[in-house]
Image (cartoon, rainbow, N blue to C red):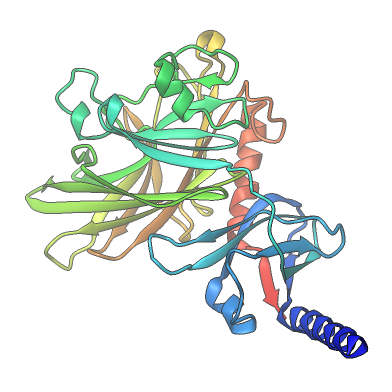
Length: 380
C-alpha cells in the first residue's frame, strides 16, 4: 500500500510539472533599432496572454528572463476598466537584439512602485503625477478664483528616483531644493510645458481649469488618469475636452490623448505650446519629425529646464508668438489626438538628457525614434 501511495505521489508530481510546462508562456521582445532600450515599458495584450494560458492565476505568476533567471517587473493594466487590458513589462534590450522571457506559475516578488499620481484637494484641486525621473501637475477648479491662478502643465524638477509628491505637498516647501528637486517652473496663464488649446484667428482660447478627474491606473510601472473640462466658448462654438495622460516608469515623456467635443463636423484648429522665457533660450523645431524642443535660459542657481513636445502624426507647422513656441494641428469632434510632452533638469545628474541643449535635443530625437519603432513582442 505504501509503495502504491509513493507511486501515485510521483505520478501526481510529474503531472503537475508537465502542466506547469504546458502553461508556461515564452515571450520574445525584439529591438530593431541601433540604440539600446533601457528600462522601457512594453504593453502586451492580456487577451493574447489568456489565449496561450487561459487558466493563468493573476495572483500567482511571475515573468522571468531566460538568460539571467531574474524576475522582470510587471503591472496588470486596467486602463480604467474592470477587466485587465494589458500586461506591462519593464525591460532592457540592447541594440539590434532580442530577449527571451517566460511567464510561469509562481508567487512574484513585489514590484517597487515607480509611478504615482493623485488628486490634491488640499492644494486647490491640483492633480499631480510623477515617476522615477520627472514630476508634473495640472491646476483644478478651486484655483480659478485666486490671484495665483494658472492654466498649463507645470514641471517639478527632480534629481531623485524616489516618489516625492506626497512629501512635498505635506511640507508645502517645494519651491526650495532640499536635495530631491523643486518647483521653480513658471506657468501662469499659459500652456506651460506642452498643454493644448484651440487656436482661432491667431488667438489661444484657454479653457477653465479641469473640473473632473479619474485615475485609470496607478503604478507600479504606469500611472494614467483623465481630466475633464467644462464647456467654454471658442469663437462662438461651445467646446469641451477630456485629456487622458499616462506616464511610464523610466520615461521623461507623458503620453497625452485629447478628445474635443463640439456640435459640428468642422475641424477645430489647435496648438500645442511651450511657454517662452524673457531671456534667450535655445530652440529646435523639426516640422518634418513633429519635434519642438526648448532649452530654457538659466534660472539663477536653480539650473535649467529642458522641455519638448512630439507630434507623432507626420509633418506639421510650427512657429512662435510673444508667449509660446507653437505646434499647429487640428482635431475633429470626438476623435482622439495623441501627442507627447517631456522635460529634464540640468541638475538631475542625468548624463543622457540633462547636461546641455545638445544632449536634451538628442534625447528627444531618440525618444521619437523609439515611438516610431516600438519593441516587437512575439508570444509562443
